[in-house]
Length: 178
Image: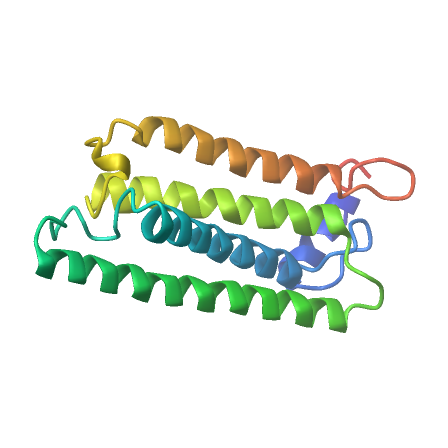
């Protein structure tokens, strides 16, 4: 079995990968944490504080009292859901750290979290904005969607870069090339 196959089998089985010091469980937990955290920032800042848009304002207009109440309720329920997702990711990450023989490598975990951030943003723009039409930022009719999709993909790519640059062994080679 080649070294890269060993590395992949360790990650796929959830076992400890010696070259990067992080289990698949820890990476998934960090990604879930990042996904939930991005959702929390989105709903708390853009929906609640700045009130640029609400979760279901594409379906229930906010220019009536009942529509505004429905949107505020949906924003609150979404806030709670993102809080639960963030806590689950954080709890699983904490549990992964507690089970590890040595501290988890920071860069792969941080990279996975940033990929989770970008994944939420990509999900939001593609599913919520474009496919379902739940809401549009700044009520601009989707004008910002292509830009936000590109930014989201850049976040995912940046997270992957941080992950890959953190998966080096003691000789300085990446885990894939050893």
